[in-house]
Length: 250
Length: 100
Image 1: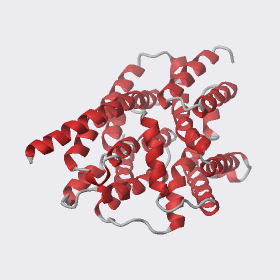
Image 2: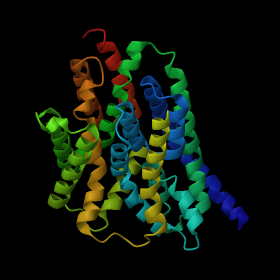
Image 3: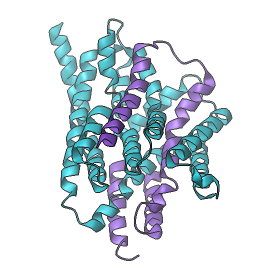
């Protein structure tokens, strides 16, 4: 039994290595951006160690830089992370029945798009040791990458530091454009959301709304409208997510 | 500093809850079609709302940011890896910064 568990763990470690490499690059940018905007390196590293989520913590960092209220940060980051509800639901059903509550709590700390995608490939044979093996190097890569990015930034010239601010938005674009190309519904959703967000920013009177709530209003309205026009088919939601994530890893 | 630490705590809580609640409490599938669809589209919606229009004001120059945005859109359309899109965007913004 112990041998089997160890094998599962090692197999997980191996499958997690490519995710670790990808995370190093992205989290390096996170540390760099944080330091760039006056957030201490150790705070950025602490965020990475406790959050382990790209879009969510990037958005949170963005709002910390803009000195948003805790309330706004909570809602925005929660909205972004709400996709983990689906992944958590999906993983929860894949687990072997004897996996207890404590193990489930530990596992939930490491749910990310990529870790979820690889773990879901296990089907109903997903085990705790495999999952922990899978999550180990991405977690370390994410945390260490952030620290390194933050430490390196202070030696970069000012003009490059300003240029580095576009990194975040380029990454956001690279996340939502490929699925928008593939699915008309996602394209419609993204277009409505971007349009609403711009409208709330530029239209006189409306532009008194803070950044955080502008984001939440645009998000909730566009996702609700898209959900009404293009309801996802039975079970398609998680399957498409799997497919999308599998592609991202390749 | 206290603000930063509170932010970290708040972000941890709202990152942890959506992950842990379904893992521990909900072992059945979501049935409501609208809610499922809403959850499915939400991440894309939030990323688009975060990007626009903020991206245009994130450097010293709106034209530079607009060009970088256009290039990022094109590269992403051809499914370039997100770390590469980000790296090219930064290099481009750095180069164009001398022109505008």
